[in-house]
Length: 178
Image (cartoon, rainbow, N blue to C red; front, side, top):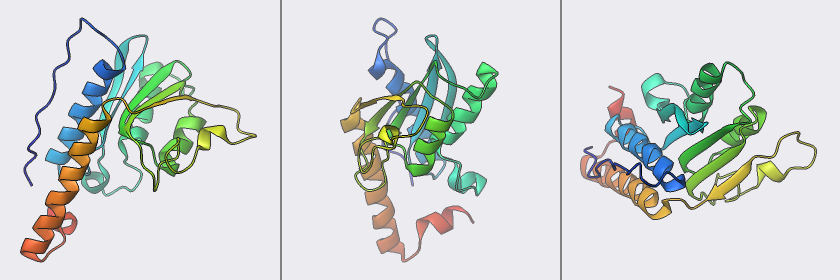
């Protein structure tokens, strides 16, 4: 399934949340091109990108290979510590329960996401895991950065996937693994 979207190339003249989310968006496009659900994530510390990942669940045959989990692992290696208090994670879709838990456990200081997930999102969409009483870390959360663009990417991916399944009578996800 060919990705009809092109990567974006942000200007370094304005370095803000949209600037960094552009890199996560580009990772989401790479995920699509690899046959994965198009979710991308990057991690930033001290103004530098220290991790850049996309979903790799099918590629690695690993249910934990979400973009956020991979970015947390890369960030820990880059920082030389599992405590990521000074890291901001940018992700194109709101983290699921597993990823939100990993964000809290790794003590990521801030999470910026594009698309809210009302079904499985655990940083505001369906549930606010970061607001649980008794947990020792509460990351700051910013939602909606580049939401329209990232939502269009996700919706188009699943629309095309459904069309292919209807037209060909097979499960695309399984076919991509063959």
